[in-house]
Image 1 (cartoon, rainbow, N blue to C red):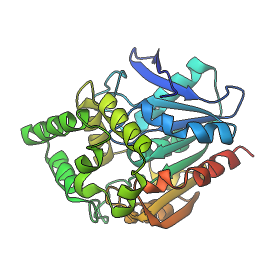
Image 2 (image 1 turned 180 degrees about the vertical axis):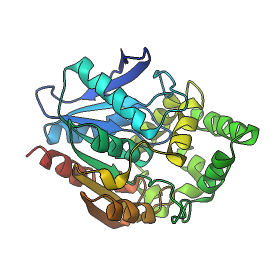
Image 3 (image 1 turned 60 degrees about the vertical axis):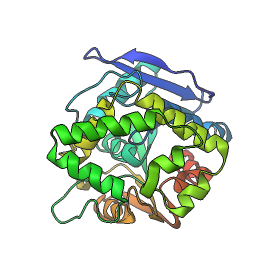
Image 4 (image 1 turned 30 degrees about the horizontal axis):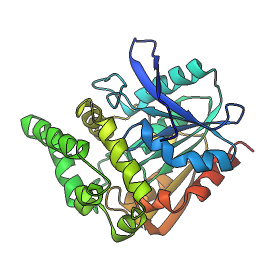
Length: 293
């Protein structure tokens, strides 16, 4: 690992864990990890931070790693946490990027923070709306998880606890099998390098080391009112998505691109959920760096 996490205190007294990559003299990027995840997934972008001359900040979202839980949080609530970290570091304007479950949180910054210059969603989920079958095209594990999440109760709590224990035991040798039916063949191929599997396994285990709270709160935030509407976003947004994604199917990307007035679409048809990022890091960071031009 090349990062060393720290914590700062939010105005309401919670701790938020964060880490940085790159030269502080360079423009600021805020990264939102997926669901589940942790600040250590930031480490996968060390090469791009250096290559594109960017100062990248990542956080463990509330309830993950050493970040205090914020039970009942909405997607929009992440903005105050981002602002707390930026104030702690003395930063102002920034571009934000979110992968998977981090995508909605990047969009929240675009919608609600005037200091956000551009948001990039990488295989990010769309809101739950009446005319949109949210789980269509997902792998079986996600369909089961979100069916339970919508019902709530003891069965959901038990499932989240079990999944957390499984991820906490993940290793580079087992992480692909743990994802099961959520990985397309292109995703599995992109995770062949040992370093990629080590990073994903360790970041997931660390994020869930405090229990399933952050994971559960993410699920509930996605399924309920996000605290903003997509059609009100005027900040520039770029939506990356692929056709071989069994975690967040491409229909989510199409919906986001069609609903956000300021959105541009980067439809990488041959990619999956993980391969999208592992195979296109430079293309993604070229968009991020270009937003500062």
